[in-house]
Length: 370
Length: 166
Image 1 (tube, rainbow over the protein chains, first blue to last red):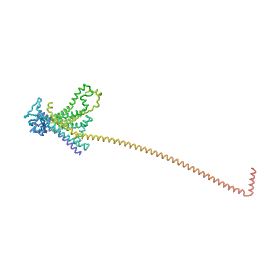
Image 2 (image 1 turned 45 degrees about the vertical axis):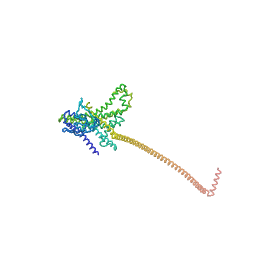
Image 3 (image 1 turned 90 degrees about the horizontal axis):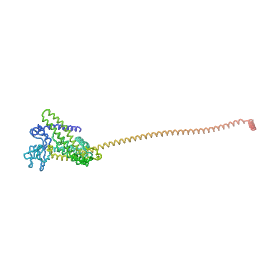
Image 4 (image 1 turned 120 degrees about the vertical axis):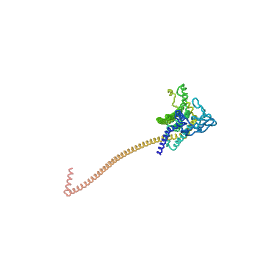
């Protein structure tokens, strides 16, 4: 029994090592993919942009010689005077227009635009396409991976929950998961929220594991960048925002609109600042996660791109080693960002549900407002 | 900034909200609640076990103290019993001695009294015998003295002489 566990653990380590390393190898491959070889700075930049963006395809890699893509198309769901659902395969990676009910759609830089029959794209003054865009509810690559992670979490943690029915101490993967759950509960939820922590622990645990797993998934050769997408982080931050506002106590709102213990002119000045603070907190959450994850992906992709740019025997191994080094840091960042997002969410919730029964006006008079 | 706005995908935002909300609700129901409940129950169980162990230890200590006390009491009782027994023994010996002495003295007294009466009886007997003997001797002497007439006459004369003298 014991031997089997050790073998499983070693296997898991090996898999992690292989997938981690293969990221560096396979991520390099698509550099030469696309319609032609990617070896100029502009092309690399475009390739990185493409990697960071969401996509309507799941592409594992492309063959530069033949222009073939290895992957599968995803369903496109658009709302444009009615719901229109079709496979993204019909775009042929942007080469073909899709005509539905007399309306032409073009897939251009991972986005769907309405065009005329020729597929003309007009540009605005900033250099972005000015064409009208339909409301795009497609199951994109990011949505797909979010669904995969959700199902994975349901299976893994549902399994852990089932284990507790028969035994007190979980076995197998539960041995690893339980300390993480305890960590979130004891180090994030309890100290920051206080006695009502139980109500919010479910949300915090979900967000923590969701972000962490997606961050780690970004480290794999699957080429996903879910948490580095501002729409995703905005959704996460928005939910935190609403939870904070809806669990705000009378004290919380009083501290925002009519700060106790300060002179009246000060109260008037503080109110707009506090109201602004309500929004800057989740905004910071959104930007922090987005920027950190995007930056990590950009650095790794850039370092790999540099190998292609230099194309010599000194730079190649050097940048390769450097990529490995940054990848290790990114593994840490993946955890850290999930932790920080959850911690700050807990902190904001804690501030909203806090009971200020220790506040006495007399005590507060002397406290300088910083 | 324009790029960010241009790249912002409302669809992705929409799906993320839906997925996250559904995931939070499902996980809360299916995973977090049972897991946290089980963890709490386990922690409570550990806490209870520790407390009961502590209680048992205290009880044990109390029992031990009680035992010690009982032992002490028993020992004291034994000591006092021994002491009492010794006292009784000494008292008994002393009493016996006293009794024996008294009895002895009484017997000696009796013996002495008996000896005295015996002696008195013997003395009286001796006196009687002496008197008998004396009478017999006196008879014999008198018979001897008065065996002849001459002697009888002399006696009478003597006696008469004495009477006159008086």
